[in-house]
Amino acid sequence: MIHYHGTPITPRSKLLSMAGKHFCVSFADKRDGDWCLTHGQSVMWDNGAFTAFTKGKKTDWKGYYEWLEARLSHPHWAIVPDVIDGEPQDNLDLISQWPHPKEYSAVVWHMAEPLNHLLHLIDLGFGKVCFGSSGEYWQIGSSQWERRADQAWNALTKRGYKTWVHMLRGLSLGGDRWPFASADSANVARHHNELNMCPERMARRIDAVQCPAKWTVKETQKEFFGMVVNE
Image (cartoon, rainbow, N blue to C red):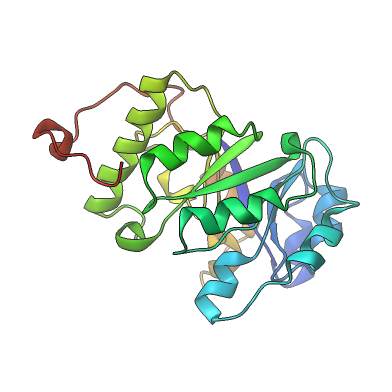
């Protein structure tokens, strides 16, 4: 699993110690973006939808498209705009407007959306798909969330997909049972100062914990009784 560490990381002297890491830079606060592009292994460009959603703000999608123009090339990639707690069609409409190459791009499946929508997103041919916690699955690691993650991985595996799956806000899942190819978190950025810890040391510990390479189909409780929710 590739571990993307969220920014901004302050003060700047602390960010300098993180050179060589993988970074997540949000359009909602892009102050460290150019430094990360120069000194990081790779950068995941986040569309800022989560921040906008939690603060009740709108996102300037045109500005986001333009911001990415000089920043998208391998190994860097960006998240296609999405509507948190919207309808699947809301997100499909945004996907249809995306101006950048699919190989540098990731679409978002919100976990409260139907499983068949997840499969449809993969059929669109983007380089990556992200799992985003939403609805009753907002809390990562809750019993509902875990059951939904199991259902999603079952659906992918049964269909035979070998897709790069990224878990948004999911670095805490390192070492758990789901085979995410990558995940991001702002844990280091938010807590290194209050813990009085070196951010690079914190990141090194996180980076050392990996997810399994494969998923084995499991029966969830609701599937066992013949009930599959949101398919």
